[in-house]
Length: 398
Image (cartoon, rainbow, N blue to C red; front, side, top):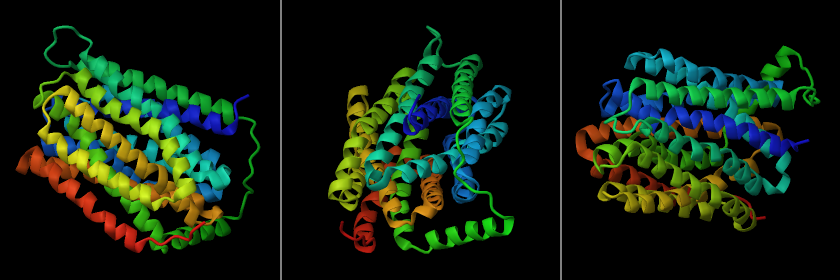
């Protein structure tokens, strides 16, 4: 019998595999296939994250009231169903609609699963949240190169066909179904610890949790650091495949490998960084990570070959591990246990503002200034945020 933590990681693995297959490099290349320009490609990649801006905070807060299990299953059902809707997409407009709805998957599941981990972690929040994140994003690691391989599998074809994109989304759907079925098997028969409450009491707790969390500037500022870091993550998801194929002259499989290697480094580094943050503090790791991400991101437009781009991806993945291993744990340290769901929903909302803004902003900037100046502008924003964070976020020493 799997432990609750192992079961949660297994479900998360297949959910993230499904989502990664539908996203990068498949999504930006699919939008390009449909005739989208840079601005439109960025919007297509970012629109699903916009969903999280509206739904992550309410989902996290709702899980504090009605229970984690019920809320998680809603998100996992979206993971299972939505990939198949891409088979009916024939134009860019419908793609946007599908992407927005697909975003409900991570919007609902993401903050709730993190709240569950925070519930059971005790004083090991940094380590356990990092292990959970690392294990589940192995799905991202496999999804990106697998998606690129599916698109590049037809020998001699100059570019992916509609059938190639359909094959990628079919595999994505199968992974989503596996995640849902595993969750149903794991949760069935489990004891529900949440007590039923009167509707009025539940609504009052829902609102009071949001107010209490949102009034703490440390939560908002710490979340904003990961939001800014995800500005560059979103930009890379949308435009690293396009840059690799159209500027650097790489193939679709190599474009997927570039994203995959960044995820590998993040996976390997996060548990170590999480344990380090438990022992020595969260703020220094967040600051170092932001500088690493800013530097490697800004260098990408200067690189034109596969191996130098891999080098940049490695350092970006390391920087991401520094930031993400510590930011969620710092927020959990700050918040009361009864509001973990709300806190993670707040974190997820700001996270998604950055993630959604990244590809949209990058699309507009690239269309006007090209890759070099666009990436430089965004990397500068990350760098300037570091002293502001250090000065304004005060935490008690352990």
